Image (cartoon, rainbow, N blue to C red):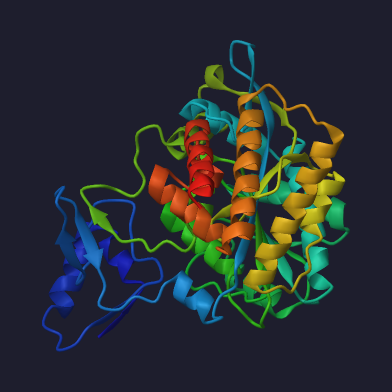
Length: 438
């Protein structure tokens, strides 16, 4: 018996029990999945779990072929993440205005509000990001003429609005695929076989959807579970020829930055410790706000989303962070959007480093004064750390990724893209100490 996407076997207790009852006596079972983990405590049928010292049970596979293996074999493309921040503004039911910057440490509610404000089709953030993504796609199409892009939307009304924005920006009507569209599969197939530029879909593009020419994505949804993120990004990584890369535009939200930085991490299903903690998870707050904001719901809780400016916060590749914060539409943003459409991983890493060093040199020469904000502090700390890592790279010959991983081993904490100011400061001290020892 062959099971494809076996992790769905835990979707409901009765479903899992039925699978076990039907196939428990099979002589041989082959269970396959591209996303071998879940966001809950439902055990996956016919999967072995081993208990650790803390009492949590981790799934174990007889054979694993992960993203890192596929990347090394040229089966999948490397992914470049372009994370956009910006100040978001909204007004609550009492008429009080609030502002928060994506990428700064925020409460769960502030993150949800700022995130939803940024994704609002009527604001400034989404048009700026769509414009940037289309420029990136045009650059790719100079080398890969049929390269396509996709916007993943949270709901149908947003998807239609994003499609209108694309039409105005590109002059070409995109393909729109909605979850209740009976012709959804046909539309996806037609898009896959065409050379048109953009597809807009509502969170339904997951396993089984294969559009190999997709190479640019806009992550315009509030979904933030590791499972959904992995499935969504999986739509863009199918390799067709050497040197192809995927470019994903996403909000500078901590949990998304962490997932982007750990693309190559091997994940296992854990019983007793869900992958997505429900406490203070911005997604939970966001989904609750979506329900409260629907027509007919409690109007007293209605939030007015005023707008958000867009700023390229950082570029994430191979677990490292590159670049310094720069406004959308600036020449420095174009430096990253104009990277050639065909580059192998090593060339991409070198070019990103060169772009970053050019930015740092230019800003140092101009005597730029850092902004007195948490976001500005994080930006400057990342800039200082990246400069020191670059110097260590030239001195030791180790790659930037190796040095960053060594600093994480010494200091702990997440990748640079999602690290706090204290964690960045600790790594700056550590890399200085390593330089002195060397």
